[in-house]
Image (cartoon, rainbow, N blue to C red; front, side, top):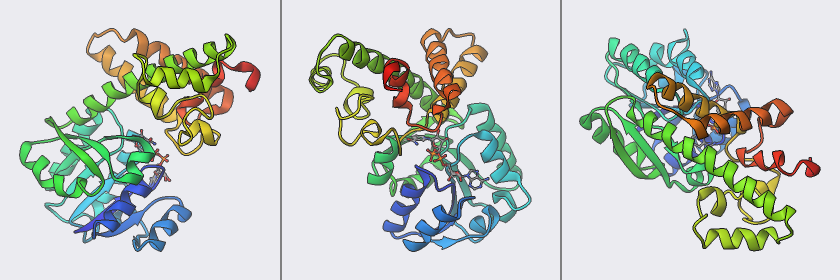
Length: 296
Ligand code: NAD
């Protein structure tokens, strides 16, 4: 297929690379010239704008930080909606709020295009390995139509329900993730303070009831999991400011639904504290720095 791909960050770049590997023709656009060059070196076509990336495409994928970026990439004069052919589907894999998804779906429908929310989980490792989980919101027919493209980037392609429900699944998942990472960080730092070897503690946790993705894949204590961002200076993972954004989406959605979100609200404040001390760009597992103050 001929695919337009906009947003080549930590997630988008490896996802677009996997589409190339799957044999698709991919036209890419990002504000970062170096991100575009990396994809061009792998065989992608560099587009001069989101509009150009969408021009002639049979499917357009966006992977951007937040709803404001998606809105601008879609609606700008040189945006996707200005370049896309009628009947072509737009797949947005960014994590954004369900209300914006519905708004974008209406905008797209007004000019004869379908819009699918398909946020992902699996982190940068899953993006590189092509093992992401996609949470797809849209009609059953639309889900079937995007499945073959998404299969080039993920292993688990789940139909969540109507437009916006992919984001509902994603927001709820990340509420758990934000809370469990804070919990694992708290426990690892406490164990260190009480004198146990963090590697021993991490090993026990990962074969015991405390085991979770935050402990066995992205353990926040450096050196416990060699492939975790914590073992490379908290780089190249899931940015703290993105987690903060997602917890904001969860608490906003909870407010709108008159649902309590006690843990989510507290976790949001912890990541806010990290962000305000200048750690917003580090992987979110750097939350352990709040507990290991003497390490800086
Ligand atoms: P990122 O900040 O690394 O990448 C975003 C990219 O979008 C950047 O390359 C940026 O230059 C580009 N961009 C921004 N505005 C643009 C515009 N107007 N036109 C073209 N390009 C533009 O973010 P990421 O980590 O790749 O995350 C992307 C989305 O996926 C976010 O919504 C995030 O919440 C979600 N997500 C991230 C992870 C993760 O582990 N990093 C996991 C699951 C979901």
